[in-house]
Image 1: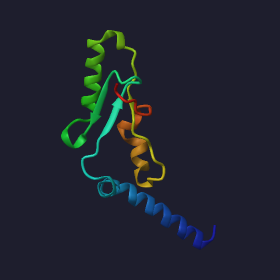
Image 2 (image 1 turned 180 degrees about the vertical axis):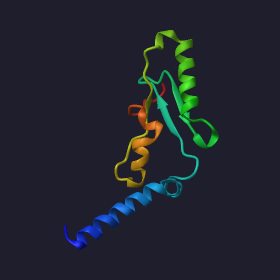
Image 3 (image 1 turned 60 degrees about the vertical axis):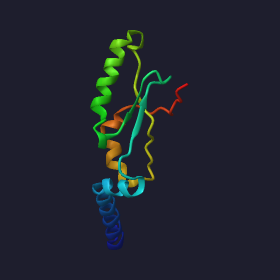
Length: 114
């Protein structure tokens, strides 16, 4: 690897690391403050909108989903899905895609509640 290639590689790697460190600010500028995510079961028997800035986070959702399954035993085998996609072009979110709890849930295209 030549010196110029090494400098280019280190520059790109540094840029990716810095953008992932400051991803919260980048997302605030590109998506706005107070974002939300929808989680639901395949047929929309249960839905939850996560709004972390208002205290409606993953833990609250897990608790409400657990209560829903206790109150509705015939739905005890339901799986909860996220409806927010990973966008690989948003390279500043790559760290979040690998580490954030919301991406532990499998992806499902949003089902409209009828």
